[in-house]
Image 1 (cartoon, one colour):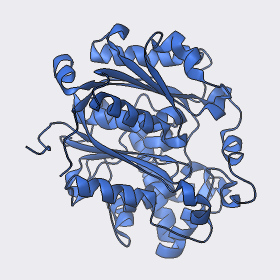
Image 2 (cartoon, helix red, strand yellow):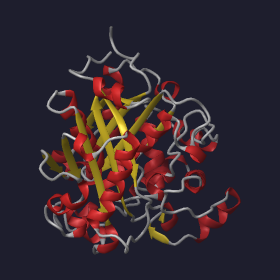
Image 3 (cartoon, one colour):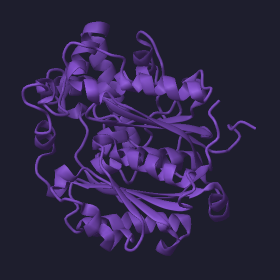
Image 4 (tube, one colour):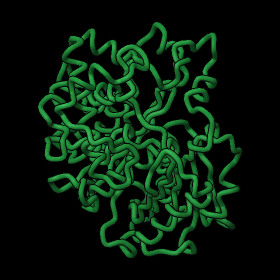
Amino acid sequence: MSKKKNRNVGIIGIGQTEYSSHKEYQNQPEMINEAVRRALADANLTVDDINCVVHGNMELFEMVHQPDLWHVLGSGSYGKPSFRITTGGTVGMTVVCAADNLVASGMYDVVMAIGFQKQGECGSTTAGITNMADPFWMRNIQTGALTATTANNMCDKFGAERAKRAAMKHRIMLDRHAALNPGAHRRLGLEYGQLEDLMEKSPVLCGELRLIHMCSQSDGACVLILASEERAKQLSPKPVWIRDHITIHLEESNTNNLAWQKPESSQRVAALKLFARNGITDPIEYFDVFEEYDPNVWWSIDWLRDFLLLDGDEHIKMVENGDLNLDGKLPFNPSGGVIATNAIGATAMARVAEAALQVRGDCGSYQVKKEVKHAMASGFGGTQWTTLMLLEKDLDWQEV
């Protein structure tokens, strides 16, 4: 079992904007302020109760340097200790991990974590991603997020027809989940009867990666308020406890990983280490919901194998058998996931927020069908950077 933290930390406030492709009626501080107000109201706090603010986004995509200084107008962080974090696609969860550490350490009792992105007012996100890669050494990621390697590998390994059908079934399931979530960006109304038509007619982006498989480009903000155990129990009738989290990346060997070396994935390494130190031997049996950072359908299924420590085609069978539905063995991305909503700086934080809402039983139309006591959320970034977090309804998992 994991050792106890210096102090237990609970999520006591959750606030998200509705997500969309463009929020032309709001500037960045106004958009962030909407999520801040919702989180404060959810926690029944005022901004005066916040001891510290942690802020994160991908600055490159809006081309605004040190945006947290501008956002003081909407974040309520004026005069408060503040931290700004940017770690790529993982930034939202990195912000939550930092906030958790700040509270657990005893430095602050109540910390507000802010993640946002307003891609509707920036240039091309894909162009931004490709320009971060060295054109000589890192040619394999010059397509940015639009890579078909995983799709092609799955088709080779499991048969093209089976793999493509599983991918499209998974995509339709995620859209059906998103359709139940009033805050999700893309809600296309897909039905399983469209599967073969979508397999054939959806525009091709790269290899077997089609437009329908790919995540959206969204505007939106997510805010979480974290508190020490003492304060959480005073302030919230149902705090969600952050049990543990881990960060694993292959930054130093990223070029090798994409070229000739194939080390174990950061997803599997993160899961192996996190589960081992928390005594979790059967993740499918243990967890009641999983909010995965899924930039496209092919990665979503492939990473499912690694996060759940599966072998062979077990992850494909989970898709085929409906095990990931809201009433399935392990409900997967009930919110619709990243494929439906992707405000990059908020995206990984939204995985934590959505998992916490499931633990609280506050998801309404997209609440999973069983009681959620144990939840997992993941984040992902460009250098094979994985963050993984465990959330709990109760504190009974701790060592006595």
